Image (cartoon, rainbow, N blue to C red):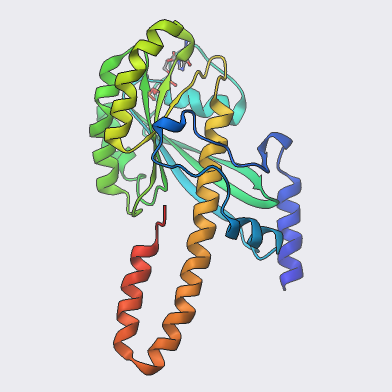
Length: 266
Ligand SMILES: Nc1nc2c(ncn2[C@@H]2O[C@H](COP(=O)(O)OP(=O)(O)OP(=O)(O)O)[C@@H](O)[C@H]2O)c(=O)[nH]1
């Protein structure tokens, strides 16, 4: 049985294009503007991957939210299809894509949900927020109001998502439309907003492709590492918990409570 599984894993890895193969951990856009200070995979992740202990497919869900026309669909199109369309077509409800990666020789999938910014689709879109491990808040550099609205978008997403503490990214779009000086002047306030949202800040352009691949590699690296840590740390807790159970039934209840709090160890 393990042989069949490892053959399936190999087959999945063979399908992944070269630019989706991750061997080094992608760092943040700006070290001073991220709550996630991790700069490498954890030692446990390297060990488990090299021991070929991961015999199942890892999958994380991300949602992209933000005001109308800030460029959410364009982010997905640039990353998943390497295209950019300058004509605006509003998203109806939600769309989703699944992108395959191979991280440290282990297959990993990122489920990307592109939601509509229009108010009339909000309730449909919100029904897809549940279980998101990544929340990408998109704002348009040329429309400061879209940055101010990110707090509302985040609160709504956190109210629906059942994930204990998702990774949060604050992503400024349409970088190609900004002069370097104007962007630098804006960045002080943007970074302050990111801090208040407890989010990691990125500046991207879907038109030129600037920073798009790096952003997704960063997201995939963090999610992958986190899911392996959770998996193995929870397993370790289960073994300890089972031993305790035989001597003290109450210990099990404490252990389950601990495990619940363990879901996110960032
Ligand atoms: N110059 C420039 N234009 C962009 C960029 N990203 C998106 N746009 C344009 O902005 C407009 C809106 O882009 P979309 O990606 O459709 O926006 P959206 O947020 O998905 O919109 P809704 O689905 O209605 O919420 C389109 O005309 C895009 O071509 C960018 O990086 N640079």
